[in-house]
Structures are given as C-alpha cells and as structure tokens.
Amino acid sequence: MIDNLTDYEILEAEIIEPEQQGTTGVELSVVVNIGSIVENFDAYKQAVLALIEPYKDSDLSTLSISEAKNARAFLNSKSKFINEQRLAHERLFMEPFMGYKAKANELKKMIDTEAERLGEIIKKAEEWGRNDRRQLFEKYYVSNYPLLAEVVPFSQILNEKWLNKTHTSNPEREIDDIAEKAASDWASLKKLNLSNYDQAEAVFFRTLDLGKAIAENDRLVADLERIAKMKQQIAERQKEAETTAQDAPESSVVPNRIQQTPVRAENAAQGTVVPPKAWYSIRVDTKDIFCTIDEARDIARRVDALGFDVYLRRKEES
Image (cartoon, rainbow, N blue to C red; front, side, top):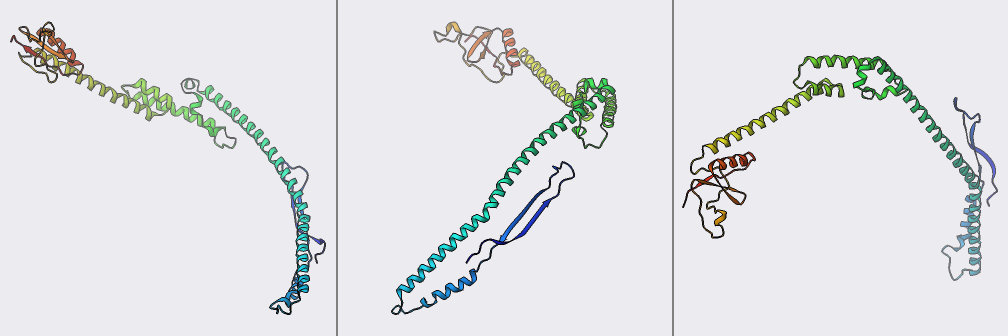
C-alpha cells in the first residue's frame, strides 16, 4: 500500500557565497533533499467504501454476523498498519533533520560566541583610539593656550564627538574658536564694570558663558539690596523702641503681656500687693520684674529688639 522512499528530488539547494573580507575560505552550503512518497491512498479509500457498502442500511435479520466481524477486523488491522507506517516514515524523515538541526545550532552558537569575543576586542581597540585622540587634542590645547588651560581644564571644552573616528570636523580649529571666543567675552565682561565683578568672573571661567556671568552679578545685587532693606527695617524698629521707652508717661503701654497686679517677691507669701513709689513693673514670661525707670527702659529696649512686645507700667503706692 505504501512504497518505500524512492524518487528523491532536490527541492531546495542554497549556497552562501564567501564574503569579500573575513572569509573562512570555505563555502557554507546547505542542500536539502526531500524524497517523494508514492502511495495509493485514494484508490484504497474507494476499496474500503466498497467493502462496507453492504452493511449500510442492511436488514439485521439477514446480516451475516461472522462476515461483518471479519470485515471489521480487516479494517482495524489496516488502520493499525497505516498508523505504524506513518510513524515509521515520520521518524525516517525527521532523523536527518534532527541531526542537521543539532549541528546547525552548535555551529551558530560557536559563531555567536566568537563574534561576541571579536566585538569586545573591537570595543577595546576603539576605546584605545578615543583615548589616543583625546591626549592628542588635549596636548594641542595646553600647548597653544597654557594660561587659559590653567583656569579652564580641557574636560570643560571637550566635545565627545572629537573622539569618534568618523568625526569629520577639525577639532583643532574648534579649540581655536573656543579660546578666541573666551578671550573676547572676557574682555567684554571687564568693560561692564559690574559691582560684583570677581564673583561674575569666577562664574564666567567656570562656564565660559558671558550671559551666566552677568546673571550672577544681577543675582548678587538683588540679594544685597534685600539684605540692606532688612537691616534698615531692623534699625528703624530699634530706634522706635528707644524713643517709646524714653517718652513713656506714668502709665504707658507697649502692647502685649501686662500683669495688672504685680506682687513683690518678699510679699508673695502673705498675698499682699505693695508696689514701691515710682517703681515700674515689667512682665517677662510669667514673672514680674520691679525696677527703676532707667532699668525698665533698658529691659524694654533689649526685649523689643528680640521681636517681643513689652508692657511697661508704673505702679504707685496703693
């Protein structure tokens, strides 16, 4: 029913030509030969249908059970045979493919490993070339602009593109342009007569940016103006406090914290209130301080300078 594998034919033949560079000298080729399978399944299918035709819609009373059993046994045996042959031919076809697959994977893995190793070598060689080019351009910069190089290191002006092998511009010319622009901008900065020139100059050489240097000067000017305004406000408050303390009448109030009935320490135990003549009381925290007018003014001035409000009250003898 199923013939052996015969009449092999080449379905695909692929040859990869050797590369112009890096060739192994050996052509890599894969030739696939798949044999044709000759079978008569269609004819056999018709024979099977003819075999079972008598048993379709048959009268059970006239059915020959023994013949029917023989027909079923025949069909089962053919089904088993077909499946066994299919598996056998499948193994026969897959055997060379599995061997090919294993060898192909092994070769690919080896090639990938060597390609990766070669990539590391190339990377190191390129890095070496970058370092070599960097040293070359740094030497040019330091040799031609030694004074500028003392305050502006080469790393500050370095353009990483200079180190690429494929970079097409002229790094030496670009270094010349940077140095010339730095000298021109520095001269312009000096002509501005900035009030914070030293700080602005430091920013300029740190950035080689004239705009940032001017912005630094403006920032410092604004900071100093705010500080001066703050100092002026503090001085005015202190002067106002001194004037208030000096002009205090017999009963004057600087808002906040007043003790209406101060108690002298020596009378606290008896619970009596005996403020002396022409003495003043100041409440600090939760305690009363009895003092003369000069002492009271001095204390009020010191406390007010700290930002607190003070009550100054004269207490006559009751």
